[in-house]
Amino acid sequence: MRLVSRLLTVASLLAAPTPALAQSPACVEGGRRSVGLSIDGDRSAAPGAVSAELERQVRVLLSAELAHRGVDLCDPGFGGTSVGTVAAVTLVATELGVDGPAVVDVIIDDNVTHKRVERSIDLRRLPVNGRALSIAVGVDELLGASWAELASLAKPRSEALPVRRAPIALSRPSAAVVRRFDLNGWFAMLADPVGKPRFGGDIGARGWLLPRLGVGIRVGYRGVRTALSAHGSVAFDNTLGALDLTWAVSRRQAPAGLEIGAASELLHLSWEGRPTQGSVGHAGAFWLLVPTLRLGGWASVSSRWRVTSAVSVGFPLSRATALDGTSDVPMSEAPLVTLALGLTWQAS
Image (cartoon, rainbow, N blue to C red; front, side):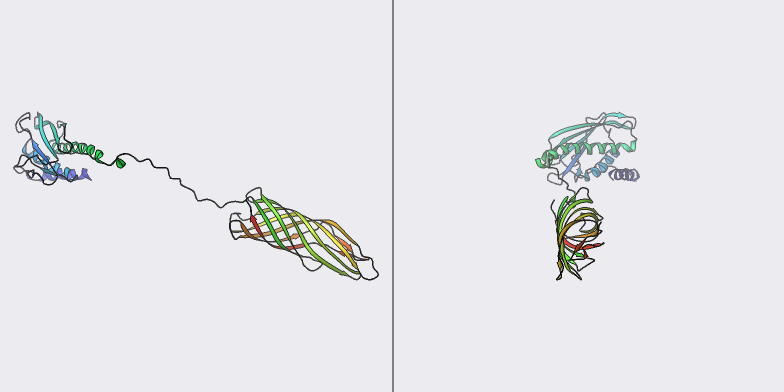
């Protein structure tokens, strides 16, 4: 934007009529912050080397440059003085060309830093209408460089020196914890196909070998059932041990989900014959292997506790019978359907 401003200012200067001399306001002590600009003809290569028109253009352009810094341009030689100004700028034409000064020295007595800085500006390769802009920019840059050093020294130490700050650790949102071991307890109801439902329960433990694959063990008990016949009755119950294989259909981190499984259940059946009068009762026990399929689900109630439910169907590999006195009473039939409701505690 400043480049555009400079070009527009130069264009307006070229288009404007040339007055006798456009003077800057006189420098006054105690006024606004200002820079005094003067032409030293005594030290120039020839009197009048810096023409009145060139001086006018330099004053207009330099005034525009300094306005960006909040500084005015004044004339110490026009009824004023350099005392009280922030800087005194003197232009000296040290070499002459065919159509004006070829080299101009810029001398700045900086009243803020109390230093003198100088710079030579070569105008020989510039067109006549571009020389004023080159001088004005050169003066502004020299002033800016001098004041920038003072500004850096005036800054508080905390601003002048970079502050080393401790790095901020960016934490990623933590994923839900995947537990690798859980304990289970169920209330179970066995829908016995040859008698009334039997109630009992299981407890077990399960470890997850993979994010969705778990292996567990389980023990349980199914309550007493009494089977009646013409010769009496048989009362029996069973305990069981099982090896479970579980596949989580849903992500285990989910608040609710489904799982499927298979198990190999080993049932230990104990029975006692209760014959009618005239018959002899028997008692005994035996083992029965029952492959089982299971469909289950869960719903989380906390970070570690879940409510679980399942339905399983078992298929005994043999038919078990017991004597109530003189006849056989079936103790197991396929399929064996079990409904379970329980709690799971995710230990780790």
